[in-house]
Length: 327
Image (tube, rainbow, N blue to C red):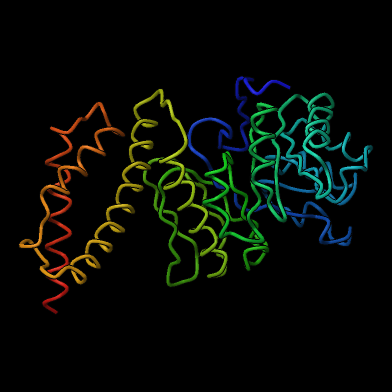
């Protein structure tokens, strides 16, 4: 397969996965955990995002209540169930079996595309092989998800490796197993005093779902930070509308704020180490060299525009260091 295939995008509910910003998809429901002992309609409620069936009996409920169906890694060789799931008319999320090669994974994805309407996403889960995930994304042109439920700390690495979306399972994150919702963009996720999740949007629409445990909320925060900060640094975007432009700017601003906070903390350490700290200890030759190096990364701004920006950043850090030392 060619690595130069034009990237295809797949809509999962309200989210477009594969182009633009990376997204967080919360609320995967695994009906296999119930071993067929619970009615699928009851387990899914009014709506679910990603759902993995236990048997063909679950498929009617998934077709009517889910945004996408998951072909789980534990049953990718159950071809009749794979064919039936792919034929529901929903987007199909194809997980890689732990022992499967990239070629086997992509072959199964192609089979699901042929059995369905072509809307297929790849998903790497379990012990993530991020290098293989990146290679599969390039070779197939299909959107790729990383299920970070078992180790949400890998969220940033997954986005850096090219994941178009992160899947966070409420149960895997220590939650109740209820749906967490789907969201994208620079968004704060807070735990209210009553225990309900509150989504504070910085542009994109969100869909809040029932209250979750603090562990589930924490996992969402980690994943959302990864898609916002790492995504703003590494994912190319071409917004076409004013709201999309503003959302992209929000993501970049969030990344800038995070980096500025880190820079201020490092500057404070420098002030404690220097023989002469504070404004008296400024090294203007080093600052000019810093601006020159930055201009290589930001040639459209150039040294003349970057110099006052960095002077303001440096002075803000020095003021902060002096305030803290005076306490």
